[in-house]
Length: 571
Image (tube, rainbow, N blue to C red; front, side, top):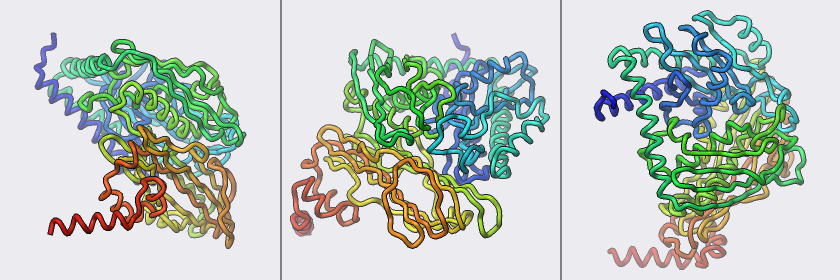
């Protein structure tokens, strides 16, 4: 029996959450790269001394549970009894719990009264970690070594003393050392702040009391998750979807398949039937497949259940080795994000069969990543630009999907055009919603977004990581599909021509790149859509008269007449 009352547990839960939020804010406020300070592509967490997740703020869903696997590998390399105050460990190895090479995890043991009692940790998507192209996301990669520097679990600092040999090696292998180390220092500062705040908590409430509360919070999340899952009808539910291609063989779709088995208070996901690993960089490490399942299940659980180690205990996942979701080393993985978005689609597709009232239509399913690299003519120095953005969110039983937002396991912010143009030799010519991209329905999907870039450097590399150029986001319960992703390239002074969604090449001064992300699927019969909302979308330029006629079976003139009649009756 706990010596803490329920209200004291609640106080400690809120205090731990507040600490993770402060860690997160420290990262965002002190980072150097636009990808972090503007895009917010970073996450943090607090762990028990055994590496179990206690709490983490809402940041990047794809990081939910992700650091758990990285920390487990760190502790294999550096057992608890070998750690000391001031130690800091880092890793990015996709085959040792990691994600892809730009995602560097960092962990710090928290000591109190001479013993390790917890860990603070964080992860940042770094703009560049070396490899064959600036941005470390080569779409033509066929092995991990082409994607950048692999960092096994290693100490960045030992007893407070920096590992100068490691620092020198890292600087020698990246294109913008000052940016990378600016972000690394942000990570160090953040987890140090977390350690300081945890020690304040330990001093006030006692180490044993706080660590007991951590375990109680984990047990609470597991208990509540099991209760929610037990209410789902037992059964087996299957769903599959396809990716366009792997970036190497542009003619071969890649299948993702799952069978969900609901048995009592446990969910089992079996990915048998999923495609074998591919030559291109869309393979996803096994740890990320688990992480994606954590996110998907959290979406259908009651909102008052916190995400921590307890939620991970209600899942069982089987992924055959050698498949795209459990590849063998050294398969390339830099574009694993688009694959994981499809994993979200298939898991949610299966869950929609089990709990149809809790899942919406498919989202855009395409976290487009864009990178440029070259010499900035204003400074004569190397530049590396990277950003990621999504499209529409799927319509649901509660309402329309949001337009031009990050969806699925992705949650970065859209980087402002002004910030890009200030720091890079890039002109953002266009940022707009894509008209007619939303899947029609009683509740429509969200619209996709178009971004158009013009290169101002003499020449630069360009890499595009896109998806859903062949398989549109699906509607649900009678809703129609969203639009496809469209990527186009124009030589200086020339017209746009279509290019593959996964593309590597060069761009000269005056060259342009245009990317239109997919709109999302609609939810419910389009003929049941409220006419006032439909007219509002038309007036806002989100949908054309032609699409209204084709999908909703009504003329704009009739919608205008209805609106005038409503206005007249109110008068």
